[in-house]
Image 1 (cartoon, rainbow over the protein chains, first blue to last red):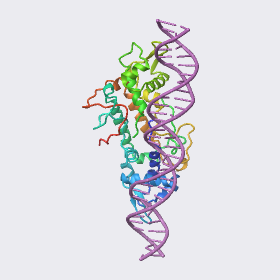
Image 2 (cartoon, protein in one colour; image 1 turned 60 degrees about the horizontal axis):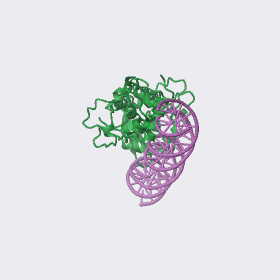
Image 3 (tube, protein in one colour; image 1 turned 180 degrees about the horizontal axis):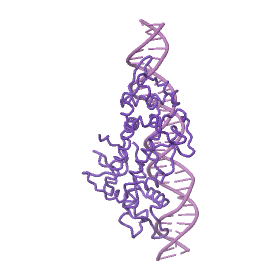
Image 4 (cartoon, rainbow over the protein chains, first blue to last red; image 1 turned 45 degrees about the vertical axis):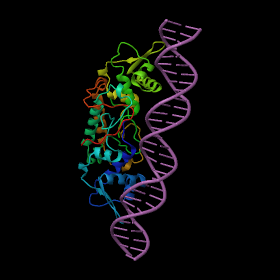
Length: 153
Length: 153
DNA sequence: CCCAAATAGGACTAAACTAGTCCTGAATCG
DNA sequence: CGATTCAGGACTAGTTTAGTCCTATTTGGG
């Protein structure tokens, strides 16, 4: 568990398909047929990504989307933030969060340290890394159904 | 988003309540009243934790649970694994995962690097850290409803 | 100037997952 | 033997996520 949502997964596929098309716009329909993701879903994703200013949109005939920044300047954290909201593994000290177990809580700020480590990891990986990764694995699967993998140990 | 489930959250509270009771067993009912978590839920959690061998159980009258290991030898990763299954942010290269978007997938192994970083972060934090944390925050809330916090920037 | 192409925004439905409860059985102690 | 407590699983309700669709707005071209 502890995984990104399917939508975020698709989102990276959609963004990856724009990486090598910085000087032209792609319509949602084009992206859908390129990636194989359902058109309404692509459309929804692009709207969210546009709101987060990861892509810019052009309306009207011959309109479409393109990346606003270079792929290396878009981090995985940006994508997750855009599609799932800010990362927070669990939250205690936020301004006005209330909790029924407060007085029995022996848990400290360790979760926040973990949270920061996760954010750092997401910050460290760019869209450029995500698109056209090294793909050293013999056969690379991806997309639709994230599948839980055995613990590596 | 990208958060642990409520159950895992409760799980850490339950385990934290056992930290300073290594030489006695606590029944599920006792733990429930100590932590304020609903008894059936505590029971469910303890069963899962027992299956993962993070706690040992004693049946029968005066039975109960205790930690199997020292708190510093139980990592956050152990807890998450026990209650949510293995961590995997998304999966491509697993043995027999199939994916409809395979041929259109430009995504590399970057997610796996992220995944490993997350696992490392979880491995680095022990139950001892989670219980009785430094609690430097002015007021510490925890439990029931993990609340998304603004990005710190 | 009008029509077609395309995004913007939001409402809505269906499916999946999570949280939580409950019941029955088995083990242990007194 | 009977009370206590865990083991295991079935089940329900609620929430979240995924996905679709409709309407309005903008833009380009004939």
